[in-house]
Amino acid sequence: MTTIGYLGPKGTFTKLAVDTAFNGEKKVSFTTIPECIDAVDSDEIDIGVVPLENAIEGTVQLTVDYLVHQVRLPVMAEIVVPIQQHLLIRRDFTGNLMDIEGIHSHSHAIAQCHQFIHKELPNAQIRYTSSTGKAAELVSNSEGLSIAAIGNSLAANEYDLRILKENIHDYPNNHTRFVVLTKNKQLLKIKHKAIGEKTTLLISLPNDKSGALHQILSAFAWRKMNLSKIESRPTKTGLGNYFFIIDVEQQYDDVLFPGVKAELEALGCQVTVLGTYPVYQMNL
Ligand SMILES: O=C(O)C(=O)C[C@]1(C(=O)O)C=C[C@@H](O)C=C1
Image (cartoon, rainbow, N blue to C red; front, side, top):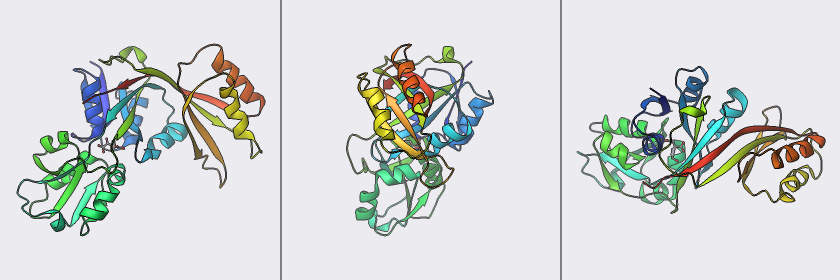
């Protein structure tokens, strides 16, 4: 049976993404994103699902950096999931928002609710956990303490918590992109219809040269290749050294992409394909 790993424990958004996208496979939780990626790399599991980007807070840097610098695994699919953050408390908590002394969650979830925390929970200390599910677990074990977690309704059910306030994320239209990593594409059986295709490229420049980024972008522009994301990340070799991650809204082909690659390599750039994959949009 195919084994799918995810950022756990139970009740995380990553688990929600896995449950929505896949049927019946064996599911295994990992405490951190690197542990989940390592498990795919060492063949302990067949497929790994980790968060990549949120509409409010942006890129999950740990995922990108680990995939670029530590373990290169191909992205085989993208799952986009709507994100609704709720304020979760123990069922025996009888106070109100002002009484909450601690608010626990994953840094991305906290960031998605900053204004809410600032305005509605003035007495709460922020505490970061490895996931929203972990925060819910912690609150469920916190008898006698006035603390709350930020997480989803799956976590509320799994840990028997009460939703004190629904939809506390600061902006509507909140979504997170999750990437599906596997060495064996044949094992991927996602039970939905893809809404599109993407190719993610990693591009590094030879050195700091005027107009370099403009030249890179024009290689895509004159071929009418649409980009849905461009991001620079430090190469970790010194201040001012960056590489670019570019998402192109089409599948890898044998004409346009090799053309872009040759053109950029002639400029001294290095081009690596991190994945070419279908995109699935989930409606919960
Ligand atoms: O903590 C979780 O529930 C996760 O699945 C992680 C994560 C993230 O890293 O962005 C996933 C979706 C939400 O944006 C908040 C947290």
